[in-house]
Image (cartoon, rainbow, N blue to C red):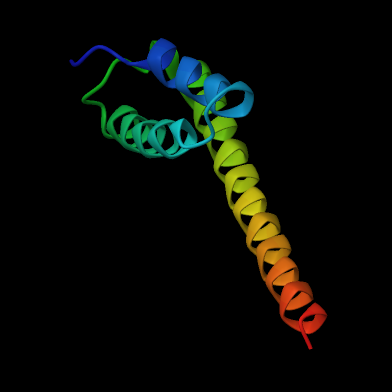
Length: 88
């Protein structure tokens, strides 16, 4: 059986919330693959709860990243539109 990577996934998930949102994608992908391996019986299931918690933190971090990108694009478009209309 392969050892679990629960601590790594949990750290990446927490860091995605606090410091660097793109780490959430890594936590999400690693968490999904490890949970599948645990379900298949090829990985130690001892870290299942921490793996799931890290995966959930990664999902939240990724969603926050996407919201931040959408808000930034909205303000960029609005600033461009304001600049275009102010020159007329």
